[in-house]
Every structure is written in structure tokens, then in C-alpha cells.
Amino acid sequence: MKRAVAAFSFIGFSLAFAATAWAHRIDEYLQAARLAIAPDRVTLQMDLTPGVDVAPLIFALISTNHDGSISEREARAYATQFLKEVVLDLDGHSQRLSLVRAQFPSFQEMNEGVGTIRIEAFAVCASAPGNHVLSFQNNHRSDISVYLVNALVPASRNIEISGQHRDSLQRGIQLQFTVTH
Image (tube, rainbow, N blue to C red; front, top):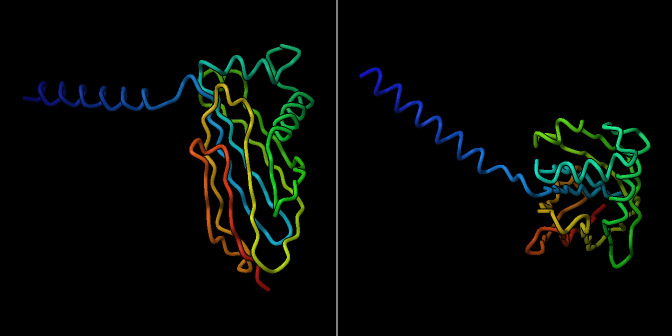
């Protein structure tokens, strides 16, 4: 009886592990964007996670001298290029994103599918009281990527998000919000 329970437990564990392994995207570049609206700025937080099949390509794009590591200069260059491929628009006016920080995993972490690149940037854009529309579009590596985009709950009580419309691929979002005094 104990052997049967142990065998069924092992089979159950194996099936659960296999389902988890299949759920991990190995051949895509997962890009998750979070937008935080404040009265004087918009903050963008990005998590970029290459699957194991595309990790060597992404690592080669970042480590341009191909020495097996990512230097501060290479990290900044990749993050800056990434921000050039993102469109942020407030009330019909393009906003320039400034890099705050960029954190990069090792090649080994990327190669194992657990390495996430983290980029944070902001745009200074004071919003007068009233209704506004913020648009975001991520155009980085659309050939191998899957996307997620979301708005964070505003930290300020003076901002209320009244509408969210994502495109079908979640590369972009349009947020309607109101600023009060």
C-alpha cells in the first residue's frame, strides 16, 4: 500500500512539474510594462525576461564586445536603445523618457531562463487639473516578444484612472485619467 501511495505521489509530482515546465515560455522575450502616473511625472518600470531559446540573441545584443559579461556602458546603451523604441504620449504630445536605472542579470541567469532585465525611466509631464489621456506603445523586438502592460494604482489621491484600453497584443495601452486639486 505504501509503495502504491509513493508511486502515485511521484507520478503526481512529475505531472505537476512537467506542467510547470511547459508553462514557461522558452522561445519568447517576455516584456512586462508597468506605468505609474503622478501629478508631475509618469514612471515606466520594465521587466524583460528572455526565454532560454532567445537568451543568446538578447545577450549578444547587449554585450557588444562579446566578452561574456555586461559592462555598465553596454547596459546603459541597451537601456537607452530600448527607451528609444518606446512611445509615451500625454494628451497628444510626445514625452521623452529619462533612464533612472537599469539592472542586468548574468548570461548564465539569462541562459537558464531566470534572468530578468529591469529598466526604470520617467517622463516629466505636469498634468493640469482635468481629464487627460496617456498612451504607451512598446516597439522593442516585436519579432520575438510577448508583452504585458498595466497601470499601477496612483499614489496620489489627486489622480483617478477612469479608463484603460489595451491593444490585443498588450504592446500598448491608452489610459484616461483625471487630475483634481
